[in-house]
Image 1 (spheres, rainbow, N blue to C red):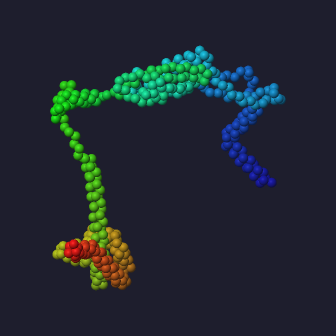
Image 2 (image 1 turned 135 degrees about the vertical axis):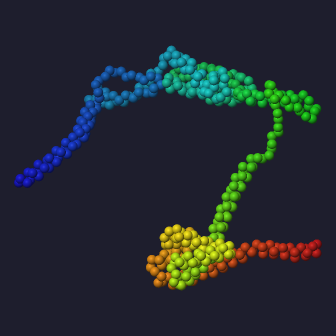
Length: 418
């Protein structure tokens, strides 16, 4: 019994601790529920008000009111109404129109200095939201300026144009004609001088039309002048040729690199049988792989000095031997040798040599003999493929020779028939 009492007290204590831990959160939730209940209780409306609703100012849009009304039936009934904004009186509308017209030239001019110096399109506003006023535009001189304020004609001298604007608030209207002055495009000092020079040349051309030459002015506005004819050569072709040459050189270099890589791989394939054969002979004579490797490299270097012939497989072996002499482990140097050669058979050979280093030379000769047999078969297949490629390359000269023979035979026959 006492145990049950202690367990109950412990459980109650745990619950109380949980309540104390979350007391602020519980108070917030409770306050929210209490406010919700109070709001729902008073949802039928606030305190009664006078039977007056305020309008918004003109241009601010309609006002929506949510009310409750009593007296139609028992209790309060919800009522939603929309009240139109206040409208201007006649005098107030005229005052608003005057205010808009006073600031309208500044809004219209856009990037132009003023309406008296119009060279760019105008900006014609179609509404004034702050006053609740709409604007409609009409051009009375459409050949110069459109109803949207776009410049259509470029006069040689200044010309005046009229724009009719109609302002309305939905009830009252006001029409006004605005004058703008369309100007020719402004000229820079350089353009002005060039046009003056053209005019002098035109005058010189008209003065003596019977002469075979026209003398150009020596000076203009105190500035000495010199002339030269424009070169009509297509110099734009030079950059294109430069880019094309660079692309062709790049393609040629890539092709040359690919050709050298194919030639190296082919020579590596041709050398593989000899490499395996020499390794088999020297290891069969009792030398270790390292000593056999050194003997092969020494023999190759002696032949290369005498004959001057470079063979990539033996060059890679010489590099691996140099790495061994620098202190690189033999297994790592041989592995790098197979990776640098890049062909599958050399990687296989480096794997066999590494296996021999780990397990001993018991099966080394047998494995090398098998690899030697495969190497000779690969070399014979390569020789056949090279012969086929050489035969294919001879086809074009053969066809050319056949064409020459046919011409030599047919030409005399055709001449005799003629």
